[in-house]
Length: 267
Image 1 (cartoon, rainbow, N blue to C red):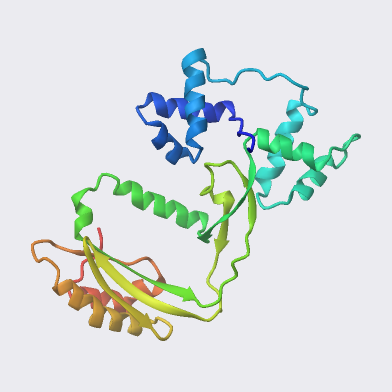
Image 2: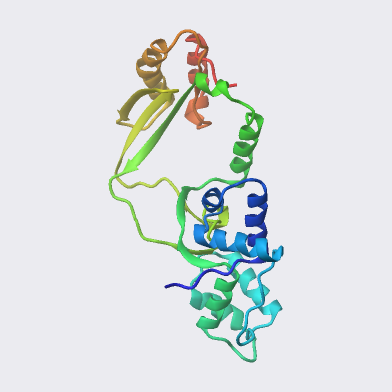
């Protein structure tokens, strides 16, 4: 049976904070991506001791000083995709008494860092991340307003894609941190481009786009596929159309077509 991960004091505090806030053990496990059994043990320990910190362990004292542990963690945080050999080599650089990979691996595990397959996500710049967050914050109080949105997007599906695993060092609940993601970009591989849309409880058309999407091609898609779908929706709601800020979506002739056809954009 694998050895249980020893939580840091911060992680234990997260668990206890959520538990005190009324979350169930199952819910805490889903939020933090920790095993439910370990969540249960942590809460039980807290009930018995009323302390966040873990009880002291018996056995041989750690070989490295606390400052060495912090240095290893800093090395990992600078590049999550380093191999264990690379991390150990950087740590040993200039040390009179080098340590082996197993020591560094043990330290990383004790600090909550494990080698995991990185999650693939589209590459998003810092500026666009901020714009997306601002957009969401402005609409965080929306409720029934979402019922009147027509969502749309185009996507390219590759016929042949490199599925090689890229490993990163991360804590169990940090799999979607920006530094732990494997960014993906559009490539020249052979694939199929499609466009689709939907509204609440109703799927719209999904069509294949056989060539690059220009302003005229996009207008043709909206004319022949969006408008018929739009006209068949419930007419007791004022619907708003959503497309992203791709240059072709904001081209002057596209904006003029939307205005001429009374297609309102999401506020």
